[in-house]
Image (cartoon, rainbow, N blue to C red; front, side, top):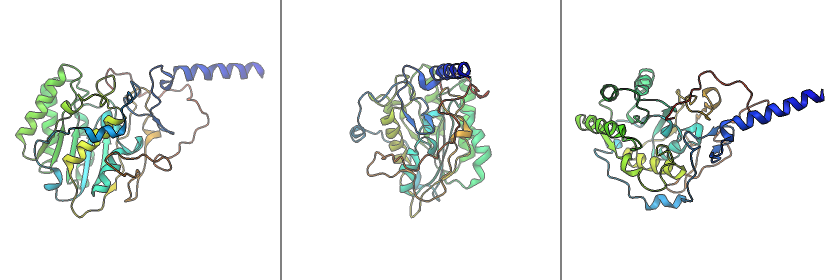
Length: 311
């Protein structure tokens, strides 16, 4: 019996050492029972305080504020890990900002997704009565640029005539210049589209992690603030954070999969209260408790988890 206990203890030590949270450069940027926010295992905020947001020179949007053209207040936001980090399962920063502005908002975003993810989401959810949309895809470009353009045009046409906000990517590699050129081109060709320049905004010190892709804590707040300005205040509406259907982050190492991150918000009160442009994150009820039989992960690894170069 003593021998079995010793072996069990040693196995647990190995599991902890090999788990994503045990990496030397992890920042501990986690939420209780949830895990590492996508992309935030690269670096911390480098001492940048939340007050930094008040000094940010936000770029002018190219096009109309979505609320000025939307016929209602139902807003769908589609993205990859950058947007997923603002979803309800990672603290609800997006809902915290947009719900008090009168939007009934859903964040459909998963780590590691490319542009065709937008078509997948819309195939499932386009008939759910959306009045406006935000699309931030293009960081995980795996195909030819011509294919990227084809998918983006299909997404915009599916959403039209709903006002749609397209967001440029950060320039962390050469191909992103071509990606952003296509986003700009599609935006110019469609009257329903407004453009947000995250490319230049993300170049400010303290916005991105060391990978040059994922926002820091402050960077996420800046992104949400920029999107909120482009979306505008919904007229005469009561906001609500709606349930997400796409919550599988298993493509990114170190992030828990869909069965442990799904969160239900069924009230008209945002999960996170705010007192300024920087939402204050509460820790009492925003993330449901996850029941486990051990404080360390078991040795079983979901088959769907893969390692990719850009989570």
